[in-house]
Image 1 (cartoon, rainbow, N blue to C red):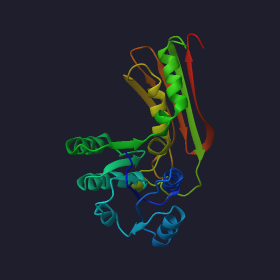
Image 2 (spheres, one colour):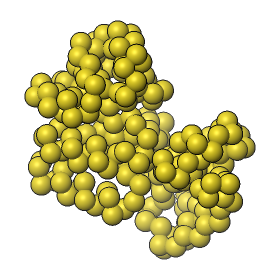
Image 3 (cartoon, one colour):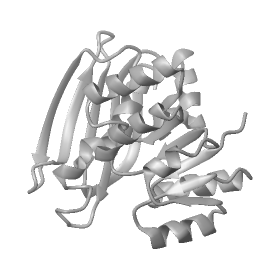
Image 4 (cartoon, rainbow, N blue to C red):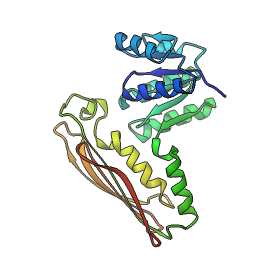
Amino acid sequence: MSLNWGIIGTGTIANEMAASLLAHQQPAMAVTARDQAKLTAFAEQYQIPKTYETVADLLADETIDAVYIATPHNTHFDFIKQALAHHKHVLAEKAITVSNEEYTIVRKLAQDAGLVLLEAMTPVHMPLFKRLRELINQGSLGQIKVINTTFGSHKPYDPKNRFFNPDLAGGALLDIGGYATQASVYFMNSTPSRANSMMVPFETGVDEQSVTILANDNHEMATITLSMQAKQPKAITISGTKG
């Protein structure tokens, strides 16, 4: 089944989505963004036939089946609610919302409407991760003991950008932490029952770096190390009794 996609936003990740759709000979049907000059260039580059000045205008287009939301985290909740109200399926970038309370609301709205609401969480859809999960299920690594995940970047110093601005839901956990946390939990054999975390704040108050330890009732532990001001390998190591 093919879908007519609408894209909200024209940032780096939106470019990757639009390029992927085009590569599969199914370019997006419409796009909207605040910067009209960028909007026009984006549509031309990815062969998107319709541009809209506002999100409301795009969502009113009855030919659009699904929307991809690639705007800052703090906008996701409102855009998801609007999209579901217009009976659109939704793929939203991580973090899908900035709190569990927000997610609970939109999840119920989607379920009640019979619509798909999905977070663009890369790791759990990667063929490599799926194969590793199969090996764990087969017992190839024995009993899983420790999972170590590191994810660090060096973002340009700018208290007003989305990485460090609390008004834009900045901070390491909401930006890169979703990938690292989801990847760690994906390889644990039961849901973590205990969590401990420490963080160092940026001058704006958001978390610049952190270390989190998760543990479950299977005696598996995971450490997650994040940083927005120090590069680290984007890597996960899964250690069991057999390797």
